[in-house]
Amino acid sequence: MRVTTQLRVGIVGGGWNGCHLALELKKQGHRVSLFEQKPDIFQGVSGNFGIRLHKGPHYPRSKATRDSCREALAKFCETYPELVVYHESAIYAHGEADALGNPSKVSDEAFRDVCYESPECTTVDPKANGFQGLISAYNLDEPSVAIGDRLRNAFKEKLGRAGIYVHLNTTVDRIIHTEDTNRIQTGDGQYVFDVVINATGYTSLLPQNIADALPVDIGVTYQTCIALVYEDQQPQEKPLSFIVMDGWFPCVMPAIDTNEPLQKKYILTHGSYTILGSFDRHEEGQELLDSLDEEAIAAQIKPHCEREITRFWPGFLDRFHYRGWKGSVLAKLKTTSEFRSSLTFEKDGVIHIFPGKVSNVVTAAEEVVPLINDIARRRHGVVREWNGVRFTVSSAFHTHGKEIGDKPGLGEHHTSNLQTYVSLVTAN
Image 1: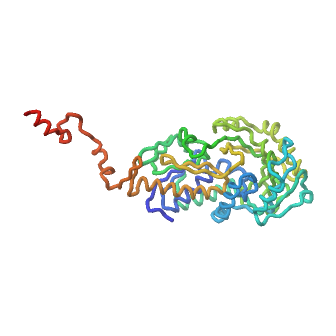
Image 2: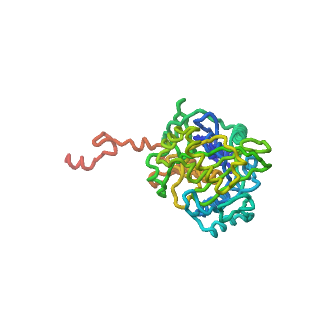
């Protein structure tokens, strides 16, 4: 539904949330501009890491996350069918012991029940499929999403057709809030908007002391994450994915960045070994990432990851050959259940998005729309509010507030200071 008030919307961040929101808000009739500090869109994790479109079993201890994933999945696939990559198999395995010898964080019965929340789920014989060290394994019809140039080119075409201008190589230094507008400050000057959306992955431009203002005391950590890149020597028509749960276990995902029929690129990650650090500030995580090089990864990280994946998939290194690594810094909520859906809120005319799973861009946008409509109502609607008092835009409170608030001084020759009776009585 198109809104009656067209707003000027500035979106900071050219990843999944920023680009999806730009398209959705343009459809609703708003004037949208997108700002990205890097030379191209989708330069963070959403454009470089292989990303699954979750059906839920990745989060066996968070029903809220599983429900959110399933709710968003169908909408996402309907919106971006050309970017959905369907798999030959998507194996969820239940490991006997993780990298530290600890058992899984969930029981086998609970893990089975979570997998079978997807009606197409089937039980897999681990040994018959070349796996070991597993209690059980299940195959789901769970796709992933395209990344890299395939993703970027698709969105460049969409944004271009929509007439959305993307300011690349543009760092937003700050957002300046005024009564009726928000100004984006860049090195090139200021841009004025009715609404600004912070889609930077919760890494910058956050309000001071925002944690104290939110309705829930959230914990946030910034994690330096890497992925090891491998090439499949036996590529199939459809890719595969394989993950061991639930704890410090390995995961293999396709990294589909072209439309070629046989895809060879995969990434290997691990529940602990590829999460290299957790920090209170994004800058600290970035400092660690910037200090890494191929020699350090090959010597310190790769051996642990390959030992772990071959513990469960002995033939992995025969089929997949190492080609390098990539890294990023991600904001993550600190929760015991590993809750991973998005959070969306507005303060002072700026809407902030804490990213969830990739399909959550759909639900985040559904939350952004009423927030924007509320801003439009407050700024452009008929009724205004001040300290709980409401009045119309035709009221003198609104039209002549400055004049009404300009009061005469005490003793000034002014009708509101008259004390005629007292003066006459005193005079007599």
